[in-house]
Image (cartoon, rainbow, N blue to C red; front, top):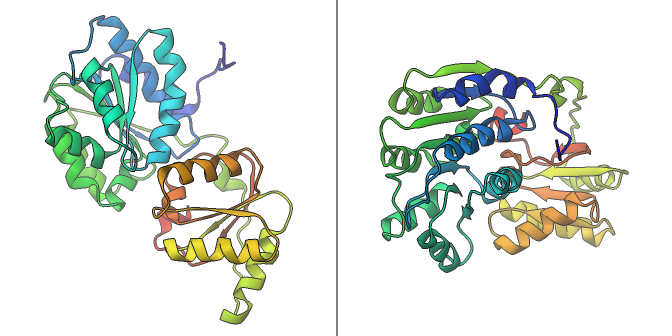
Amino acid sequence: AEREIHTPTPIQAATLPDSLAGRDVLGRGRTGSGKTYAFALPVVARLDADRRRPAPGRPRALILAPTRELAAQIAEAFRPLAQTARLSLLTIVGGVNQNPQVRSLHAGVDVLVATPGRLLDLRDQGHLSLADVAVTVIDEADHMSDMGFLPGVKKILAATPPRSQRLLFSATLDNAVDVLVKQFLHDPVVHQADSAQSPVARMEHYVLTVTEAERTDVIADLASAPGRTILFTRTKHGAKKLAKQLAGRGIPAVDLHGNLSQNARTRNLEAFGSGQVETLVATDIAARGIHIDDVALVVHADPPTEHKAYL
């Protein structure tokens, strides 16, 4: 009520009765469909019903996300719910010093939001065990498989109790995701609910055929239009170079890709999200479940590598 959320979105209405009842759920819904609350509410309800202090280094619930940005976004949505139920919440991601994360783990944590790499790293160092996890959520499962995290995700799931609850959310259910489902979900209920306010239906698509010589001029033209623009490039180097070229033409732009430090990624994303800068140049790391309102134009400065990144 505090956040003026009174009506569930389609994916929430579809999955909550089953996830709250403790069933394993496979939910298909794209970014922006309200998935975060679809899994945050059952996680909080479950831990709240079983009031006990977490043991040091043994989280009670685990949420896995493919990118640091998405992990941060999930934690932000979770925080008010966790606070209301007096549950502790910790985010562990790579790219930042692990010591504060390790200290928090040792103090005991109820809900752990993590990227697979750093989670396995800390587990292998002996700082954490997944033996007490009552519910595991895998968000953007298809992107986990695209980004090569699948072997790590399997290791993580295998380390959680075999009969614990598992909720898996994915925009597409392809073969790689199917492998996870078959191996780790028990008699899952499948729900497919794309948002009724789906942006993809009301979108105009244009293809511009340009020569190499015209490309930067055309992109600069598009980027200088009013409103927020996201430009996607195929490589990190391409993103950095294009952001520089635009700045050189008087078009303020920030870049977002894996070569930047985590602080720079956060700072650039905030500058774009707040409207301080209206152009974001990104590799498809930003296509992975990051939600930014009111983007007027999306330009693929390079053809996307696969259809899901484009979608």
